Amino acid sequence: MAQTRVRISSLAQYPIKSCGGMELERAEIDESGLRGDRLLFLIDENGDALGQDELPRMALIKPSIIGADLVVSAPDADSLELVVVDQGESRHTQHWEDEAPAIDQGDEAARWFSEFLDTPCRLMASTEVHKRPVPEKYRHIFPVEQSRFTAVAPILLTSEASLTDFNSRVKKPIRMNRFRQNLVVEGSAPFHEEWWARLRIGDLELEKVASSERCGVTQLNQETAERGIEPIRTLAKYRKQPGGVEGGIVFGVYFRPIGPGVLNLGDEVTVLETQDRFVPNDRTAVVAEDDMPARPSDL
Image 1: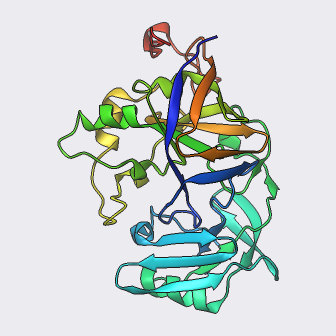
Image 2 (image 1 turned 90 degrees about the horizontal axis):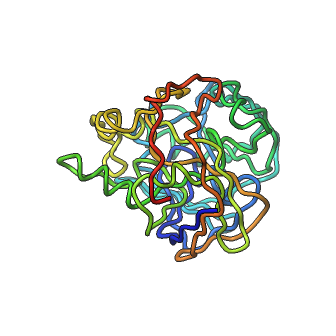
């Protein structure tokens, strides 16, 4: 069994889905991932969830949440302070393929977000961990019910070495927050995380679910909301895997927690198990031997 030791160098959660991240020193983990992650989200007048793909300025909204208190800031706007409401009339909302109940956070919040984004919207909360079916295209890789609205699995892990490798290939380096990661590790080799199957961090164990296939949202500068061509253009040249379900351009790995636990900055990460062979996200795909990424020799 391969052993590789690395450390957590960054922890982040996203209190409002598709808005800015919140850096943490400590994170409590439950079945939904980092407690408080994607707790809130914005909907349009039809009840459909909003994201940076249609509203890039969502990247400029910086929320922080402590207990039930939410503080939101954005450029050239007064800050918004409110208490997250977990009681009230439930409303069904639509998240792309999925429906789920949520609690409206009131008219003051709706006005603030509508004015900043220049579009009618309302702030909603998924205050209870509810169960929903896995989106159909992912059921072959994650055949259990999910909680809240993670894309594939609750925790997205990336590594500093992988970003350094990418930045060595482009003229203008990018920041890690383009990938909207939860957990960053240091001390590993570039893209070794792709081959980690099971990890232990303190008393918490994590199990790999799938590689993270990247979309055009990563092309948005999270500080300016300006769209460019990276990282997709360069990643497509050397990080496109066969057997993808959404294009196969990968950066980062989705993990799910095995039971509850706590993560802290600086915690050591032990790799308990690595994959013996490349496993494509589309596990039904027949991948030619010549197309399979080579397993690193030093794992």
